[in-house]
Image (cartoon, rainbow over all chains, first blue to last red):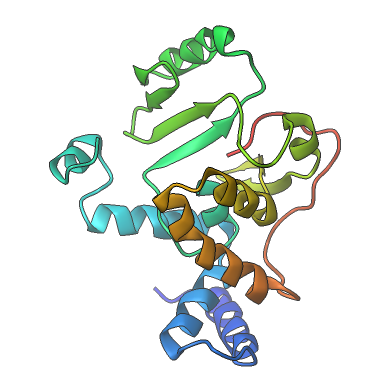
Length: 67
Length: 137
């Protein structure tokens, strides 16, 4: 489900970052997503990323070669 | 790097560092906390929590001076229902420069970029209050 409040915050941040030179379109989206999020949202996104790569559990990380 | 992620740096990390002002000989007290939380000690300063989150306890953080000075500059972030003191990005950047391992140096451009972009941004961070206690992550 789309969170309208977050969408508005994201769009505002995305517009604001449009003023910064040197950002590629994908960087602009990436940083706008990160900067417009709350700490909890940032952490959830980080954990989802690790899970999506099978890196969240110790056993999975070991299988990837992490100590 | 957890503190940087909470402050908007789009990166990932596999563990969370806690800077604790405790002599290393007293780290057994941290072990007691971990065991009470049903976590596992993997090394004297490294623990795995029940959900496999890795936690490192640091007796010092290179490049940013003493704990109490850094603690006064800590940002208080609302995270998972708690107010958590974290090192501000400026100090994380200094520390990463001082430590200088490849994985620290790799994060420097991202932190710098967020510092640059965050200016005049309304990032949801609560400013430091002098009365708060605890550690940094």
